[in-house]
Length: 286
Image (tube, rainbow, N blue to C red):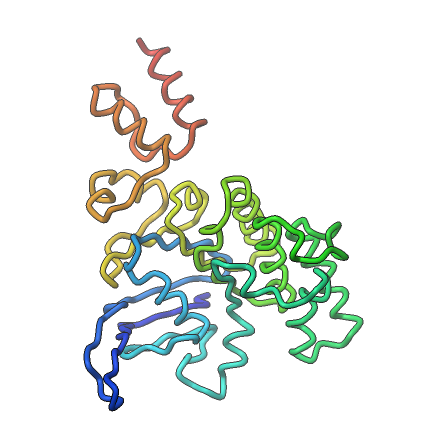
């Protein structure tokens, strides 16, 4: 069943003059159709300015389309009476966890969202415990968020969204400010939520290694969707991705260069493990 549906969505950023008249407009999202089903893990890739973050903000109704329609769990994001339900269905995690963490103690912070929703006190603490355990941060429940590492803070921010029990989580470049260890922590957390709790995930990123386990990858450029498919299908097109100023995972690039040098390896190798196995097969055939 579709949880997110976008039809012919366009969004213009307007620049106003001093009199409040429109001076110029720039189209950030251009005629985008999108279908995400419950339980999917969808990654959206794109160079800076491709429109991926603007599109993400439409799913949580932070932005409303200039043209077209976005439906979240069957509700039109332009319907103001449904705004609260839409934001409960699609939780949002941003780049900077400091902008999302407001409590002075981890468990208080995670309980803030459910409390605002009017969840009974006893259930709030059950949700806090479940959410912190789901992201591997239960042992830090009494810590101050300020004392945590970047990766730990981002996991607390994700727990805060999970505690509101959304069907879908939209993560807008959640690892952009983290070191490689923090990035791995956060992506592993998101994969677990998707796999074990069947939370639908939309991950906006420009780190290629983060998307190799996604069900579907969407590539955006100049506001349009220019490629979509499985990670293996997308990363089989190395030259096309380069045209859109995107990299590919390291193992994919090595395999591609070996192919060009005449080594008969399969297309769309995604990980070091796959590369080693393919090279073993090649060596044994020789």
